[in-house]
Image (cartoon, rainbow, N blue to C red; front, top):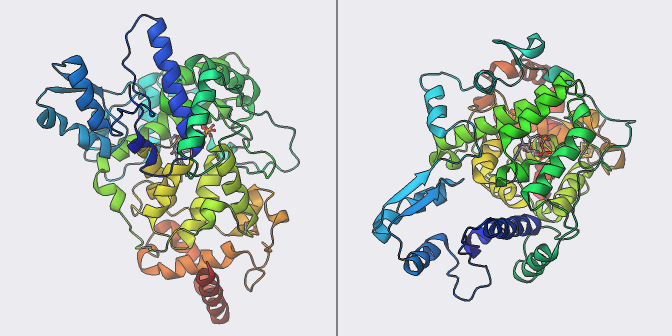
Amino acid sequence: MVEVQEEATYVPHHKKKIAFLLSAMRHFAQSLRQEGWSVDYVRLDDPENSGSFGGEVERAIARHDAARIVVTEPGEWRVRAAMETWADRFGLPVEMLEDDRFLCTSGDFAAWAEGRKQLRMEYFYRDMRRKTDLLMDGDKPEGGRWNFDAENRKPAKGHDPMPLPCRFEPDKMTEEVLSLVEERFSDHFGSLRPFWFAVTADQAEQALDHFVKQALPRFGDYQDAMLQDERFLYHAVLSPYINAGLLDPLAVCRRVEAEFHAGRVPLNAAEGFIRQIIGWREYVRGIYWLMMPSYVDLNFLEQDRSLPAFYWTGETEMACLRACIGQTREEAYAHHIQRLMVTGNFAMLAGVDPKAVHEWYLAVYADAYEWVELPNTLGMSQFADGGLLGSKPYAASGNYINKMSDYCSACAYKVKEKNGPEACPFNYLYWDFLDRHRDKLAGNPRLGQVYRTWDRMDPARHEAVRADAERFLEQL
Ligand code: FAD
Ligand code: SF4
């Protein structure tokens, strides 16, 4: 096992993310040794460490007089491409094993996608339900419907107190890693402390147990809600653990299904949660491997603005962005709707280059790896793939954010005002975005009604929208 500088720095990963992964690796090596394995572990601060995967494989081959190289398939195209050069580079056979943190191999996904005109998640998800037998009643879905999403969009104003995710005190090994990260990555994004992530499989199990008992019953209801003083609502906060391999995705889903069968969790919550894991998580990974390496360069809307500096500092008068970015800096976490409808929505409306948006998301979240982050960002959130992942852009005005959150009451801008210096910028940027991209978006059947509304507006309103957007984007 090797801690490599190159992997920690090719984007400025959040300090908490680096600390989480290094600590989880060190704890894993320790548990393997306790089970009797011999582990050759190279630390980041080892003076001999070459700083790259390739360099470390080369040194390991020499140390162990290796006859072959066995690796698990990685989570990024970049790393896979490098591994594919190793047979020639080192003159040894390279065997690449399937990654068992997934239920659908990239080969199975490619077979599912073959010959389909549209790769809709919903149909993939139904196949995965049949394949895993999760929430099935014979060959029919439990409760007579595949999807209970319509019940999962409640705003959470006037809510009961909400549970916090399970927190763990750093042990000695984690403290050592925290000092290392403080010293080496002080210029990276985000706050390192307080650090409370699980770093072992046992702790991740405890976090799962805590989620299932405390939050899962209400997971569905408030899935799309956002609140200033409740960063986690009823979300699982398990993605870092599942993606790093501390939790097994199928076992997590079986546990959730068992809670439903025991009558402790309603169907809309259990189905909604299981869909995220065997549906969305597997589906985006399938898309990633199907579409790479060209996927990362897609820019359907030809947007080219730089990412605003406040994405790194959180310093903006827009309360929704300030809250989501501030929380991202402190926790290396934001839930799906904050990522999609606040930071993602704003970047798309403002015309930011999707690659810059992608690099930001890859850096700032503790759960971010390219196989999952790229399709979510470039496809779902920025519409840069022209509709492969989502049938229309996730663009919204301030009205949506106001409906689903309590951010607007603390904002310098007025969400009810459509134009002028005091108006919520999302309001005019939304229309300006649609106007700017009319040639590419007007033919989308799901946007027909929206363009008809725009066309019915007074020409003076059109001019005001364009002028407000120009003024705002210039000072951005
Ligand atoms: P919950 O809302 O409690 O959901 C439960 C689980 O379902 C998650 O732990 C996760 O494993 C899975 N899940 C839910 N939605 C998705 C999804 N769209 N894609 C894949 N898995 C999903 N997720 C990542 O794991 N890594 C990323 O880098 C990442 N980047 C994203 C970027 C953007 C722009 C957007 C819109 C979404 C991104 N997501 C990413 C998906 C989603 O936001 C996170 O998985 C979720 O917020 C994790 O928090 P949670 O564990 O509390 O999730
Ligand atoms: Fe965000 Fe607009 Fe609401 Fe301010 S008024 S919090 S900018 S949606």
